[in-house]
Length: 114
Image (cartoon, rainbow, N blue to C red):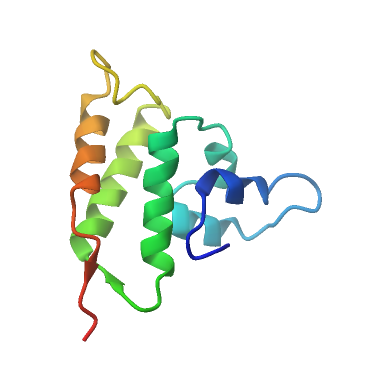
């Protein structure tokens, strides 16, 4: 998986008999199991998962604790919504997921590692 990975593309690497089997590594980077990510078509969700992977994989910077906390909250709420991708749509029943998404997107991603 590349430093600037794409959750949807990387999830495809786990399909089929010859697919990757280290799902723990994928989940560490993207927060979800690859079998769940391949079902996601919502570009904003794929983007936020990919942003997290980029932060986790960056060996030159350290992610902030707040960024990781907010990401965990987003993933928890998104899973709890049964992966409802309409959370950013007006009138959605997933207002908590939307708030977690915007909170994460607005969060500082890195802290100085010096």
